[in-house]
Length: 602
Image (tube, rainbow, N blue to C red; front, side, top):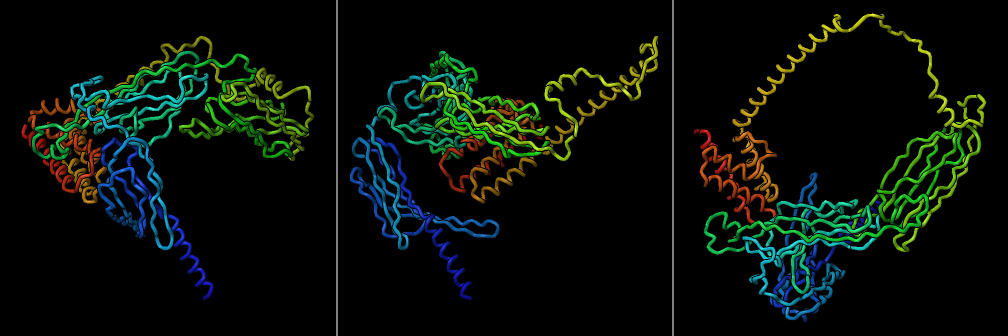
């Protein structure tokens, strides 16, 4: 009984400590603001606390706060219910002077323990209200978007380096406008470079930054590690991007779609980065003979799993090159094994991590070797040469050698081995031996010809029959495809309604992303089946043309495309209520029904 009570008490203590260790107070705010701008300072706590103390905010005007709120989330997974709560303390601040200001840590008590938040640094820059209405129209277009309001840049971590040394190419978008999304992206080809992509989040996160005294929302589009493969001047071509920009318009009119975007209109703006020049220096000419192009900083390790074996027992010989640099481009060092060893092709595995600091990890080369004869053997040390980017010199690493004792195995033949002949000699002699054939051999009688024979005639007849069968099979296939298109045409409406039914389910679950995705699939799938156009070939342009050919009213076509646009831009728009999703659902059902009735009447 005492042991049971002790176990329960211990379990309760562990659970209590695990919950306590998971409590966090997190401070959040914009990293850069303009003078006079109002912004939020929030503190989020994942447990109920008391005695919240805010740090000194003397560098800012406190317009409101603290206002408190809480939210709860309940999940049921495999019959087990979990509940989590977030308590938020919010301040509205206004920047009153320029400079960099630190906001210290806030504190709060949860139970008997006090928790502190992270500190923040906020940069306040000079306000430049004239930017939006300035006459600077560099890179501007019909939307009136200035090149100062929206642009992309390709930044490189270094522009002068050695051949084989790495650099990081980072593509960023800078904007002062509301971005609804992106369309076409054209990445540089990186001619003359070996490339390795750095993993980035699937969605671009915009963060406020001070850029030359002005505040921009900046997002990282991609990061790539580049290894120049030749010396001289190399150029990275411009990166091209088409942005969907939301701008407020006057006299936007009334209606569902205008209300959805809040009086905004979408514009397509094309931007591109300038060409970037990279100066690549050739490696010094005093390279050792075994240098094979490795550049970076490395270590060499070798090992065997056993040094005493019997004949025909396998041995694993491993080479490990670890460090940072162009690991994937490194060739395995040359190893000279004893002639009495049978050597299999190596298994090469790369364990490489690509990040903003370059490529690091290891290249592992595993050899399986089998000694065929008894005796004492030695695997000589191997050498590996690389160009060290820190000292700008060539360095040669040498591994240790291994002595292997091979005892006579139970299955080894008692035949004497002549030491003057190696394995290579035996293999070479074997190529000259042609063994006598002992199986049955078919011989052709002299003077007989295939032309005009029975076999020749049968070959022609069989070929003709095969051709006829292929033609019949092809015609049947074409007919089946035609019927398939007709079936898809007839079932287009019912298929679309099944997808709409699934979208209604997501709507009830308030799953915004899956709801809009399913609505878009229903619309595109309906047109694909109804117009007999493959889904991969559907675009908004050819949809408009195809519907016009079916005598569909222009208003219907515009409504159809508007619903599609809503679905495409919904992921970038602010969160909307369930009633907004209900309107989109009803519009999708109505426009599919209207188009179906119009086409069926023809």
